[in-house]
Image (tube, rainbow over all chains, first blue to last red; front, side):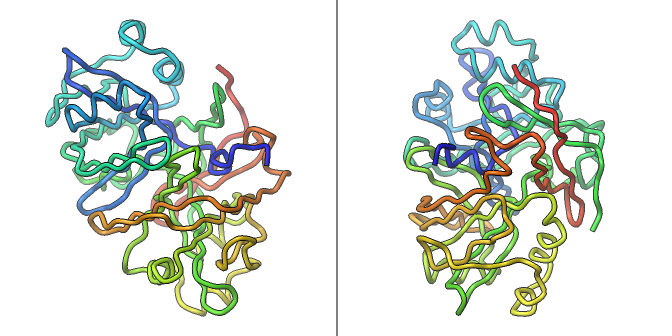
Length: 174
Length: 174
């Protein structure tokens, strides 16, 4: 088949992943390959290529933050995913702050930040899967109701390469 | 916090997962907790609760199919996720067929079917994470272009409980 098989699962949500120690040695990358593994305790799986600088930082410090960008951060998210090195951190119009429970930074403009500690990892093919436990969540109450995301909140769905779409605002109740 | 932390990553795509041997002993469930792990080879991670019948079938046969439903299958997807037992399979208006490379069934109405063999699994908290290798992909060329999903294809995004939304049809190119 001509399509890359993983594109059959797309569009996927795009998240930001920060790592390292703020402000001394940190980074931010974009990641589509993230999912929930367990509800209680809350574990999240993040797939990271060993070619990424983030990979080294997560290995070294055992911490990461999954930051959830709203649609209004699309351009910053795209740059976080396509630029690299210290120049990227300077150019991005994102506000980093030290996490509450981890040394990696949270992203102030994100609608949620999930501070996590790595509990397990294993290399599968061309990526390593990091299983991480939530240690401190933060979210913007403007974007979420008590039990769910608000219908007017727009999130980033990655189609392929530089192509993105968002959700509509209609919730269908069954 | 009053919100369940995993809802901060929602809305997530909802997929169907079939398991077992068709037509003798098979099942279908819904799953939001699925992601790509590796591109080459293509590995997908599927998180399954040990309380599910699907869990037993995947353990027993080491195969599963990730079927990708379009928005038009929403009601069937909801029933696949809320009913159980043989009554569910009878009630669902889905057409099951034996896979090409696996004994589990594919879903004829899905926009894609990813037939997979389990290569590893591990229990994390209240779910077991199954790492599965793609052995045969099938997709509907009406829903995908060569490299990506078509903008007019509507997919299922799960908000919480019986609440769902879909994507809009505008692709933003950066």
